Image 1 (tube, rainbow, N blue to C red):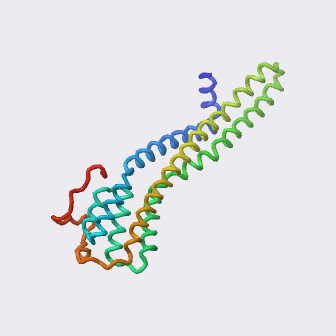
Image 2: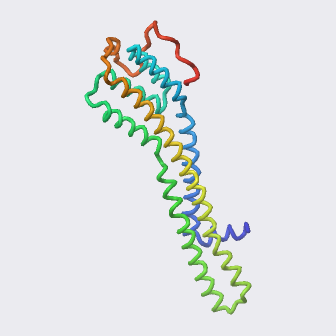
Image 3: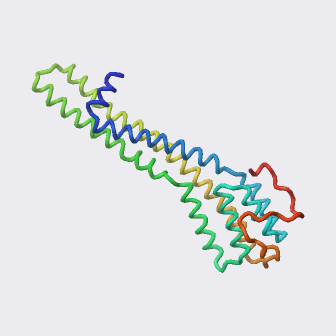
Length: 230
């Protein structure tokens, strides 16, 4: 089997090299996305509760500071949401949706690569198998080969299809898993958006006017930031 694999790589390089590139790209995207999602996972329930307490007290500075310390996509979007809320943006809903969409673009980055690989690699493998079978029939028919030798060559040609299917299965599974994770992040952002929308009708507190930077320091009256949010 190993000898047939080496033969496939060397003889059918026009199929094996694209397959090899697709497999390397699939593994690279899987590792990159897995690490990215792991770094951006936050306790949104605790963040929402903390933001709600700060906003109920009219303490926009502390709310922005809380979101900034959380970091990641969730913290960045929440921090911009507090800034929009404090500045009394005319259309908060649209402005916050723009910021959410920018965050989702980061979360969905490179997923299309997995989708494309999962869609085309079976067909590339099938093409290699068809060409291999045609070549086998032509070669062994002229040489008058036995049916056993011809069957062995056809089996060798099927390696291309098997390789394409294996790569496609891995890519499609990873694509679906990462899409589910991105959808969960979207649900978290929608929850934060609903929280902000519930405060859009309240008057702006004086402390909100002191928002001059994304990470303004909290006032001395605020409670310490809980470590479990980080």
